[in-house]
Image 1: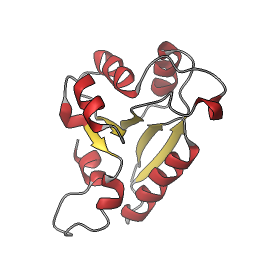
Image 2: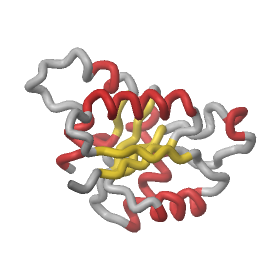
Image 3: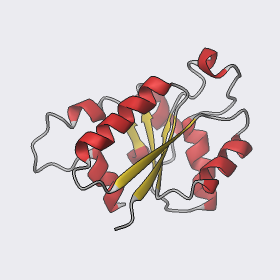
Image 4: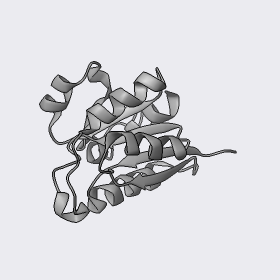
Length: 141
């Protein structure tokens, strides 16, 4: 069975590792693979990188410029801008924005339903098994 390829964009390796750990923990059938991409210096470059990966879903951090010391350069766009531009090319594609700044991200979004607080990854561990988790939301989109 083919795997679902998730592209996860974040400037922090620690957050990318946490996301990968979440997927591995929830993905009992090994249906998903995660490709972590660091944000590039331009939005155009980033879009090219994402498309080159041929993902089944795109998940981006909202504030891609929060920890630029790790990158060594400024990122002049945020995750919502990335997802919005991606959706202009691939309308209705499964895209999600993960953030610790939900109000800012939701305000910047045309669709608040794609914004998820990063804490949802930890909260999914405590949910009722009958509830749909974040990984299942990705799969059914």
